[in-house]
Length: 380
Image 1: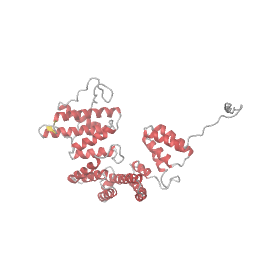
Image 2: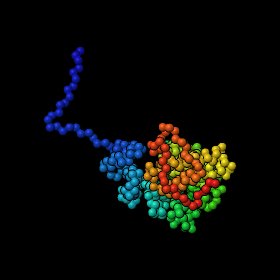
Image 3: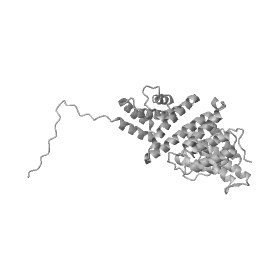
Image 4: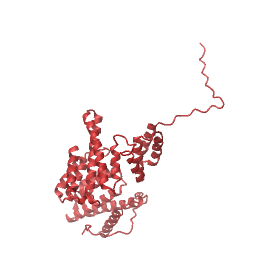
């Protein structure tokens, strides 16, 4: 039997145009953009999103991703305009609007607290409608979505409470402010009983009402729930919420849970300036308590606790400078505490040979210009 002759490839004739590859689909462009967002490469993500919008200008998913990317890049006005295109009365708003657009707009409405409250309420209305659909389903995926929806509703309710409590707004002086906070938190705990963010916010309200024993009880409930949540679980409150929890712990002298929360935060982000500051402040307060209790606290001397405080504060100071962090009062307090530790003869722990600090140098570098302030606790 003769060999099979290979088929001849067609030869292109002179003048034939080369075959054009089809452009990437909108879906593939958005998949690439989402991967870049996960990698925090927002500038490149925007380029892919804009290409997707050239193909499908009304694509709601693409516009939401664009808003998020612009927000992360610090272009707040453009981000706000993008999110506004997703809600009525925009002619291109999808129906229903994505609740996330309202949630982002609430956070971008710092100069309009009542407008922020309306955005939170609109998001809650949409989320409740979505929740009803998930409650009727019985599959595992729907149960997971239901849990996430409940958490989002709680965060929107808590967001409203924070606006009512914010002393920078006139709303906190309104006669209905306190009752509104109580009602919102009651609704939050009804939609998700035991939610740590709702319990934490309720504790904050009780502190403002000068009811520290109740505040402590609610904080302990919140911590009992939170400490069993994995660091990568979406149910875990975001870092700013956990930092606020640490501040409440410190206000109530609950140092051990404060340090445990900070440990979890630093496991996720060891460059967080405020976390290092709060850890240094926590150790400072513990050193102070140790002095009052005969020189020791939990088998550590006040000098050891003071040294731990100094190490954290030095780290915070370096990170603050390297990141050009905008919180100047925080830096002033750090410098003030370091100056007080200096007076007590507390120096930073020696750096092992070859070990480098956060700024890439062999030893910590302190900034000058410590500021004294009233109201800080002195160690005797």
